Amino acid sequence: MTILPVIPISPDQPDTLQSGSGTTRRRPSMPPRHLADLDLAGRKSAMADLGEPAFRAKQISTHYFGRLVRDAAAMTDLPAATRERLTADLLPTLLHPLREQACDDGATRKTLWRLHDGALVESVLMGYPDRVTACVSSQAGCGMACPFCATGQQGLTRNLSIAEIVDQVVYLAGVAASGAVTGSPPRLSRVVFMGMGEPLANYPRVIEAVRRLTSPAPEGLGLSQRHITVSTVGLVPAMRRLIAEQLSVTLALSLHAPDDDLRDELVPVNQRWKVAEVLDAAFDYAAQTGRRVSIEYALIRDVNDQPWRADLLGRLLSGKLAHVNLIPLNPTPGSKWDASPKPVEREFVRRLREAGVSTTVRDTRGQEIDGACGQLAAGELTDASAGGAAADAEVAQ
Ligand code: SAH
Image 1: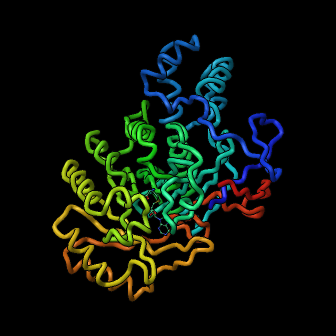
Image 2 (image 1 turned 180 degrees about the horizontal axis):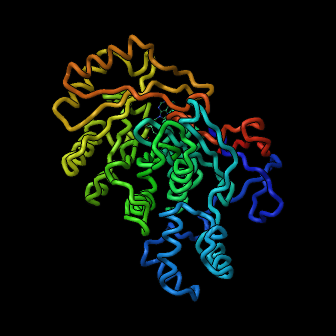
Image 3 (image 1 turned 45 degrees about the vertical axis):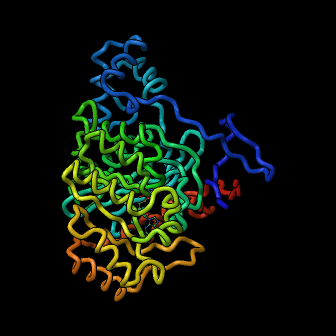
């Protein structure tokens, strides 16, 4: 059913599996411990274990979260021996860049990463006149199997660690700070968990990553919780757990259909938690945080874009603390589906607004570099797009 990420073979990596077809990939496994996995107290005790003075915890945290320095070798105010110990024990390289692509005149950049076990994930940086947003992955692949989503076609490889998530953001914050995103402020201010994976299926690590991103420096990156968006297919128990966390992150719910018949197909997890139940959980989240939930709806031609579905969605959301974000479908390679024609899209918007529901159409950033919503599918690398890295596709499931 799926094409799994293709892994460049490197002779110095012993931890490999030999498949029947002769291609090689490494066994999915969590990465070594990293500074960003730990809170400040954890870093202090890690320093004690390394025989370093406790103040080092704050010192390296200031480097990493305050100055966005990710490499111990560049922390030149530390003794050389300390830098070496840190590289080995607290600042291993988690994300190896395979390829960077830019489009939209440099305002959108996608980075493809190879993780320590060869899994591939992507992050996207999007610059706007008033803000810079990082779109990050929470899992390698995804187990939710939404048929219109490129990542959904891959299946799940593994959860990302807290630090693998946080390090994507710290890297992208560094790119923004370097002034590389022309026409945008240099400070990264928003993070959306809309890259690869289902964030709420990697719940504890995503929540800890959010804590790291929002704790004030030097413990964390000091972003505002309200500027972090967690997007979910609608895992109701996890949404309920999120309500209990008392965080004020923005919740996005990928609804895509207002009726169970169609949603069962477009978002298969709907077979377990139905539209009414998932919306209830979303509205409860909105009530608890006082923040509108964002209802994500990819408009697919002749599939979910009928006027009656707009009206039904309008009835479900009217009077609720919700905002609809319509996403023109980005067709994935080989997909039978296409985006809705503009007049159909406009009518859909009109009907929702008529029902009193605030509605916008998402701008489709990054399409030329397959960096747009649902296009992050590292598994579809070809020789050319991998920049020469070995890229034998392997059918694994
Ligand atoms: N698993 C999370 C995050 C996934 S990506 C979730 O489903 O919410 C973020 C958004 O992009 C989701 O709303 C997802 O449904 C949407 N998306 C996925 N593939 C898409 C595609 N091909 N075109 C448009 N939107 C897509």
